Amino acid sequence: MSSWPDYRADGDQGLAPRSKRPLSSPTRVPAKVEDEIIRLRKSLLDQGLDAGAHTIGWHLSRRRGAAPSSATIWRVLARRGFVVPQPQKRPRSSYIRFEADLPNERWQADTTHWRLADGTDVEILNIVDDHSRLLVASVAFVRTKTTDVIATFRRAGDEHGYPASLLTDNGAIFTAEFRGGRCAMELELAALGIAHNKSRPYHPQTCGKVERFHQTLKRWLDKQPAPASRARLQRQLDRFRTHYNTARPHRALGRRTPGEAFAARTKAAPTIAGIRLAQHRVRRDKIGPAGKVTLRYRSRLLHIGVGRAHAGTDVLLLVADDDVRIVSLDGELLRHLTIDPTRNYQPLKRA
Image 1: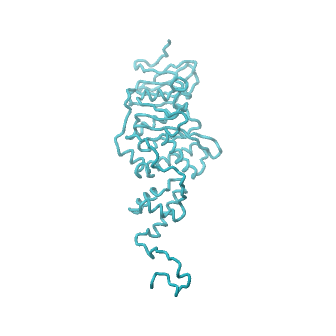
Image 2 (image 1 turned 135 degrees about the horizontal axis):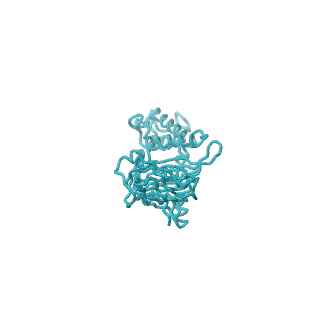
Image 3 (image 1 turned 45 degrees about the vertical axis):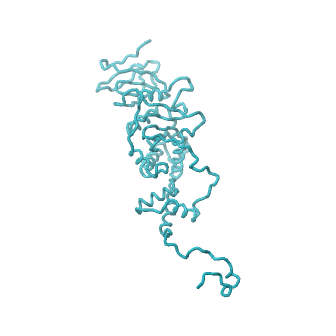
């Protein structure tokens, strides 16, 4: 039968143009694969996870050993109504991206807010590796203090190695430069030999990677049950950190996970002369009525004088070998000393 319009057989309708589309397409994605693409899309969205064409292809490859191209997956999503055109959006190719060459060359740190089930506002401190996007720390606090930043930074450094530099905004927990001094976190970084870079005021794009991570984390948290306590929120953060680092392909990393990108290259390290990075400890204590705190050093219990004026103050002891800094929870440096191993009591030197 001829495929040309036929007036004798179909009347006026037979003269209308007919589609040139073939009756079958051997290269078309099978219907069951299309259905799996849609199921993956819905499942990832329901979990608050990235559900783009590249991510769906990554998951399909893990399941099947192979997957259609990202362009094909995008066409399937568009045909099924899952892609909304956004012509007003700035094209990705127009962005100028800055990325550290090595893992641990630069970390970015920032805080963001979240609410518990009862409406209580809490803060989440996130620290991201600039090169690999590895989430090195994600910790919830009622209100983040400088000492919380130091303790979190220390734990992350012990787990992943210390970075050569840290990039933050100008928040009071990170810097006291605007007050004409240095806060405990700045002193800590200087002691560790780590460069501290700060963004321009009111220019969050400088810390763009950690700012963008806040959005990713909140999209996922929004799909989880509202946590009744900070401890439950922390368990959610720990679970997401594992998934983000080991099971979530990142578009900026060539669809590798942050964990894979972090492990792929030699790690950078602090290059500024500072305190040795061995034997680091963080200890919480309260200054006693006599103005002293205690510290176990080389199997001996030492007493360190801080001053009766600070009696009852909760403090953090930052210990690096024989170098000790005693900091209040508000970030004030109360004493900095080098331990004298010949004495059980480390007296407060008077001016």
